[in-house]
Amino acid sequence: MHSFLRAIGFSEYNTKAGIVELLNKVAENPDNQTALVSSEPETHVELTHYFGKNIGITWHGTIYEGEPDYDYYFPFYFGRHTYLREGFSIEKKASGNSYIGVIEDLRSGVSLIFYVINPLDYMEWNENGQINYKSTPIALSALSVSGTILLPISKNGRDLRREHKEQKERTKLLAAARNGDERAMESLTFQDMDVYTKISRRIAKEDIFSIVNSSLMPYGLECDRYSIVSDILEVEATINSVTGEKVWLMIIDYNGIVIDLAINDKDLTGEPEAGRRFKGSIWLQGRLDK
Image 1 (cartoon, rainbow, N blue to C red):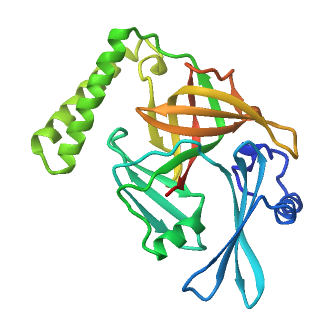
Image 2 (image 1 turned 90 degrees about the horizontal axis):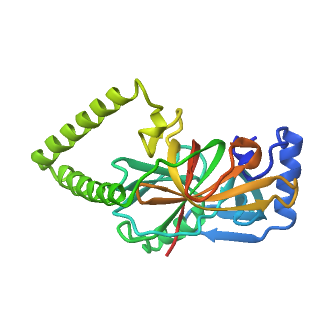
Image 3 (image 1 turned 180 degrees about the vertical axis):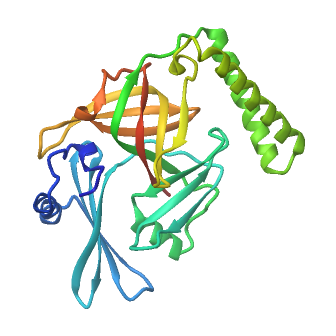
């Protein structure tokens, strides 16, 4: 069983028989059926079925000598917002025909690693030389099986303007440091030391989430899993058409990086609303667009 199936409303599908039944539903009535004839000996095929608004399952396989062989599947949430990034790269995973992508985004200060949810599109565009790794838009989405709603930190207009200015300055310093500017590296080091000192002084009397507004950290051993605290911009719900389970669809914002997030109502503590914050672990996905 894929551990993130429950994120799209399949919390009770935890046996092999249940998964076979679910994949048979995908095969019997696919919303999208794609085949890719490439220079490789096999023909790649994908079956996709939606079980709610923008949430579903993709079943990937190959056809060799006329017979399809479906080897892996994954749940997904198609992000609705595409963005131009500073640059990204794609690498094939060690087994199968799945891919991971790496985004270089100066706003986060780290490289974001995501699971590519439209691999056949990427394979076709890459083989035909149609991928521009500097300007191809990417829609980031995420599935979560554990989340909590936090209240926002109270800020006035002056606080917001100061934060915006500081974020712009930090982005410039990160760009300069990446190009080898030693002064920028030194400034970033002093900034981090100053933040650490302020947090250490306040944490003795305050809760950490009343001090830190947002965060993004690698989570576990999988490279595309993260622990995140971010602002909620929009919230809506969809119902899984098979199980009837409620799935929350949120748009979250981490330092200007907007991510579409799906989480089962059973796995969310608190009532999600725009203006509040989401804290939880996520599986980061990405859809390449043209």
